[in-house]
Length: 493
Ligand SMILES: [Zn+2]
Image 1 (cartoon, rainbow, N blue to C red):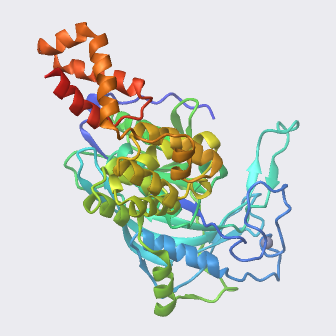
Image 2: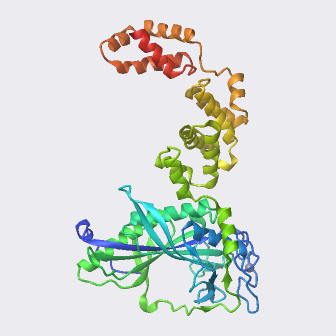
Image 3: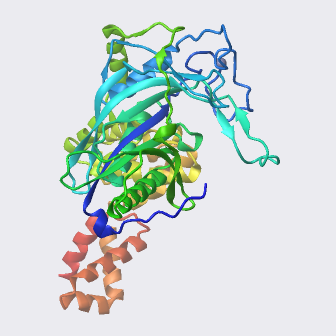
């Protein structure tokens, strides 16, 4: 589509305006089967093999709602602090696409399964900002048209209907975000909550998390929102941020040049780093929503809801707060450790086993994470159990091991599955507890380095690090650095 290059506003002009951003996020629910039939809900099968009369929308084939999909949608709602409605209905959303054989999606219009939620995000200032979640509704996914990648792609498009009927939760935010960074943060928190609760793996490469952004700008101080533009199919966090920033500069550029914003749907081209018009309001769809005649209303009892709630456990944001407030972790570590429930559980069990949350956090996010990454393993498959790591950390705390020795032992635990103490004894990797022997070694080092001794005595006390390093080297890391420091201070006067 050939269009004139837009005139982008400069930073001074942009500073006069306030962007207003809302996101619509589609999350694919991690069920085994599709939302209204028993076809597998899986990615990567041969094209058009996971289909049946129901998901193909053949006349007479009746949809049956998948209870697990409802359960996951409700968990998603609770994770976003939404009120779950006791009664909601499904509706047909009519449109025509080659990859939508029934001619409609089964969605929820009014009322949706859940509404009035929120997500807290961290601002760069350290403050917390609450972003409203307007609604969450369930719907089925469409198929996929492939326009390139085949020999005859110049003449044909291909349609794969495996995805038709996969369960989705659409999450609509309030227009509460004021920058691309805030949108980025919101999507990050939302993704984390979905992954943590096991609602979805949110794998963006497989299209399991998709995002549309509504963007408008208004003069600072103005109350009325500007005309909004929808940017569709932002399939990475980076593109979301870039597309919003481009759109803000474009809209301010149009307004500053005396123009008006056209309400339209745009797409983002990452190669050009710009958005372009897909369709204007005049061409916008009238979906002609009407209640789905083949499905009864979705009734959720308080008992069932309570059961789902109880099975969910603690939410990541609450857990993060507890790790910081009660266990003294840094905000960053708490964030890393709550990326998945499995990782958070591993950390908590390690901390319990060794009694030192900070040490547990350091080792889980540091040495253990590095070993897992190198082996291409997830925390669930760690050959070292939380109890095993806890024992290792306990040996450091009791002085039987130095940190340096423990760093040698952990990879051996990882590769052999043996316990820390067994490796320590087998390889003679004990911390040196004989201070007499250590004193002798240190005396030797002092005698061999008269220049450094002179420097130290002349007031350059940082030289002590040199001596500690020499002592650690001479003892192959078996000396306790604190004990070495003590003896050195004593001997050097
Ligand atoms: Zn099917």
